[in-house]
Image 1: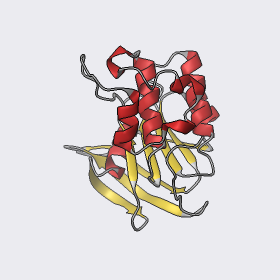
Image 2: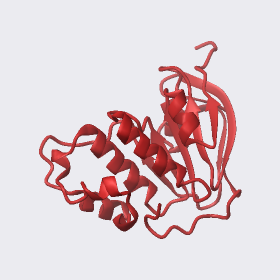
Image 3: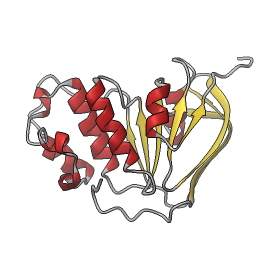
Image 4: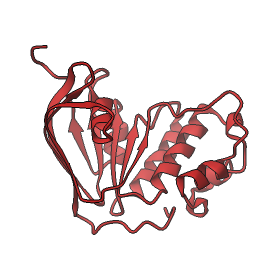
Length: 203
């Protein structure tokens, strides 16, 4: 897979260190959790609904409060964050090309299944087609670490298989951290999988 020309850090270089993280919003919801991510890894966060997997991504992206522990980012680390439900209006006269340009992504390396929809208006795409298009836009952008929150939402089995193929091509390039409650998907798509547990403690 080739998207934008990405000058990725050397493979194996540590990009992110999470040490004893306890995170949430008005109160803690997840942690403590510790892990590292190096360039070239595709790492999955797995756990039941409500355990705070998305909160971990939000904390890394500075959208959730850190109550304890620390998140250490490599100097100059750049992120792309694909949220669980990409925003799409009922009338949206933009094409896939417009999404690619906004993300700084080169569509020429897109899988054949995506090339077939890039010229279409995004308000005519199915939920699954739009989801994968947004994931590709994030993966093709020139960043060091891509955060993907439940990227299999709205996907039928063939489209999920396409997403696994796309993510497998990322191994050895940049770093990807993704959240899913689907363990089989994570095992197929990731180089390693971490279990996330809800925070247990006094409020």
